[in-house]
Image (tube, rainbow, N blue to C red; front, side, top):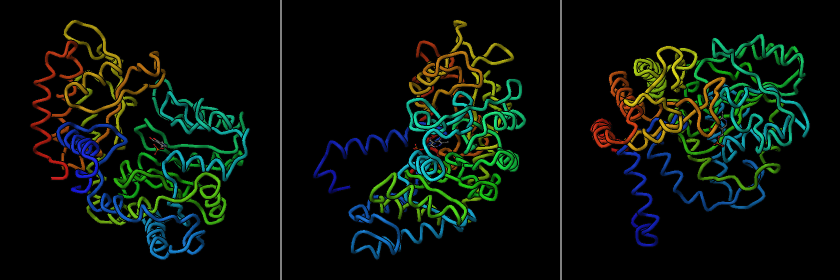
Length: 421
Ligand code: PLP
């Protein structure tokens, strides 16, 4: 850090400011998590200097013995952690991992069945403007209007009608467990591949807090930076017979040289996730999310589907019962307003569509909260009650008059659970 201060004080300042922001405010963005100093050390290392196109033992450059060792360790640890036959640890991001899977299994124009975006699906599951919606014929399956859960009969019906070549489950804003056996049987019935996008919940699978998709899926993609708590990046698990197709789709099809510092950092994160403490952390994430969703319900925010089994909850601010969250003046609050009001009060959160949302995607009627970061900080159920009360105060505060008081209480809470203490 001293070298950075001397060479580039402006960027050094940004780094310090960001550290202060992360330490001094509440982080409830469901896709974020502060990674360990060991992972950060690997990320900020000389491994960043090395070109290593190819795979361990089969590189297009000399001098790869050391990075080969790092990648072999990452692959072996990923396979052991998830019980997978094959792992590719090179995708730069979760989106890059998904791109490689499409490239390995499909040709442009093929049909894909995935969760509808408004109901929790990801951009790479068929959004217009993304490669998936541009090059592939994607059909979205909704959640049930009453239950807000995946309706497996509807998915089967859609699969029979549309005959997709690939079915995707795993989402961005779905808080419940997924019935992988049901998806497997639907995929088998229509002869489709099954991709489980475990970007969000891979850490919960690694920590044995929720069931693993690996025995059911042809391919599992995930990000290493969400609940898994590693460096920003992606990875792919698959059965042995798909290994070479997946590897070729990552390199040379979708990517050039791998980010060897990130690959090494992924190896560190996989080792950390194999420790017994990680299981306790994963279980606590889910307990915290349940406690937070229940406490937010008491603040007038209705948990979509009634609650959560994972690290996140989606809250409907319209409130099916009780008229939703209203400010003192009686006005209803949109997702966008709620997000801004929380940020003003030092609570980082993001707006979210709710199923069958009548508001525009940039506005929305909901919020998404995640408990990975606060759990990493050591918070437990009693703190979730405090957080819900703070969110409630921030969201109801229409003119910002109450923000300084909420900020003060947020600062007090995070001081008790310091990040990078
Ligand atoms: N898949 C899902 C379900 C996600 O939620 C995300 C990111 O939020 C991704 C893929 C993409 O990950 P990345 O942002 O690393 O490209």
